[in-house]
Length: 175
View 1 (cartoon, rainbow, N blue to C red):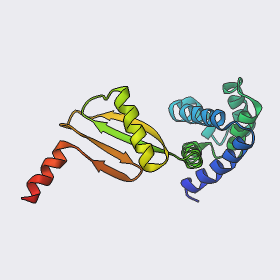
View 2 (cartoon, rainbow, N blue to C red):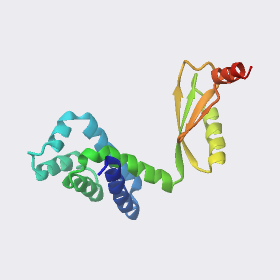
View 3 (cartoon, one colour):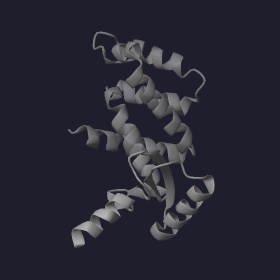
């Protein structure tokens, strides 16, 4: 079974539990923290991936790391671990976030400009995009010094290139 399908199945089940417990954000934060630790801490990754270490021992490690979390969050993490799906944590988190965005009508937008834009400009851009898409916008601004002027918007799989270079290229190729 593909990792994306596994991630989707677990994310759907976890999101369902999170919604019923009204802990969608808290559970996402715990999943994300687990993913970051798993991907960046080689000692933890080696322990959790080692088939010679008993699941009970791995559970104790998770219990220690998340000692301050509530039982629902610990139970979800222990469930993922007990099913041998900790190596799929990245896919689970990505799919969980997709479900959250879909249910809350949120889309990611990447805006690329030559220089930083003001908070007022960001607010106006978000407002215009929300009107056009009828969705909440999660805006990420990236600075690219190679852009002469204008900008590029990436909305899902759409790219809107409003850079001066592109406009000049269009003028040159028309003639």
